[in-house]
Image (cartoon, rainbow, N blue to C red; front, side, top):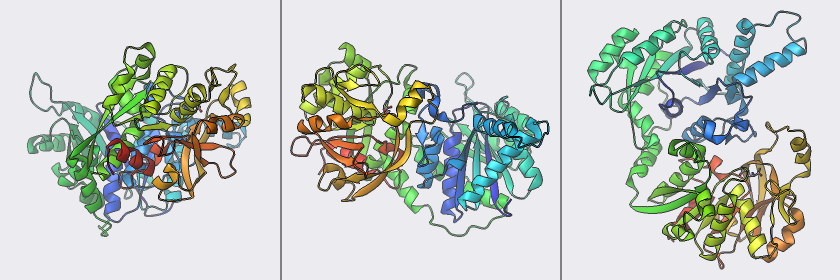
Length: 547
Ligand code: GLN
């Protein structure tokens, strides 16, 4: 292991879903602003080898890296806060770890030994963490351990972290993010659950160095002292993290309690005078100061288990809308419209007139598809700005084929394998995967180059660039056989793979429609608060009626 590299492990206490990912991202941001390059890592305790096979209603959005690895949505937050691309070594699941150990065992890689959780699984985890730290050439790694202390599933990761600290006591720090309830019937913030979480962590042999107290309200001096005494730390090491309207306020809130100095001091590091907080402060302020509102409707389908799940399923799309709006001094307002309700007629299409722009995001399968097609036809005819992301682009092509080219019953073979007009079809290389039910990690995934047509809406949005790189996650493509018929409808394929075979962007010229554009890739994965995505920015500009 490279000497001097520092490791901060972030663990959760009391309950999940209190913003451990944002806390980790914020720690990364703050340390970078103080001059220390940071490597952010996520550890997910589930047995899936990657996040790709999980339904978004189960686990939120699947975030895709440049490498094509399908990961947890926290990786999206990391990239957004760091304003940087992360590698596949920065993500780890139990499934990945166990698979590597078992594969090595099958190859006699353990030389005939009995293979056991300790030391073999633990060492595999430690090696992956150290490898990621080295690949990143950063000074500090911040590793978020998924789940909550006391879970059966994440215990091995905490054990690996403990072991790393045992070997390098000066270089490893533990931060607990614990929830402090303020029960309405009592009207007072209670520290006991957090104390218990810290005790639970101690029972693993780990003493947390810093406690981040997540609560509806800020922690007062009394709570901090109480926690400090019972958790064996100084009151300065208890950081207050109250609820915020915008997650981009979190780093600034942490600074109110001096978190970055505390982290540096605890790690024995000096502040080096990095870029400072100015850029982030400005961004955080913009999130509150939008003067005019821009109303965007997202027509999707991952609604079935309630609003919370829904916004999680499309988190990168939501954030992408925010960044482009903030940059233009706008206040975004996002409305969720269920595609199924357009299908049944429960929601009239005229509803769409209320919005400055409509997005159909990525998706899979049949649910709500005819509703989405109706929506696309309506916004095309009514000249309402439209942005189609992946499935939203494929359905744009299906709609034009059916309603403009007159190819009745045209479809994607994902839904209708027997259609007479398979305008969206599976790539030859994918047929085998589907036939063999080989679904995990086999889509067209990750960053691919795309050549842009000069003078198109897309190329202008990208400021005249002739070649871009964007991230993908799909199995189906525009069928080359039907390209001439589709182009006759007026739809222009303004972005293609450099060999000209795969259609990456479809659009109507500005003379025909103010903004009607779809991308086979997922632009939302590269939208960052400090560098909004050009296509989202152009869509928002038109949707807000701006110049
Ligand atoms: N279901 C489509 C495909 O597999 C689109 C995928 C997506 O929207 N991410 O190609």
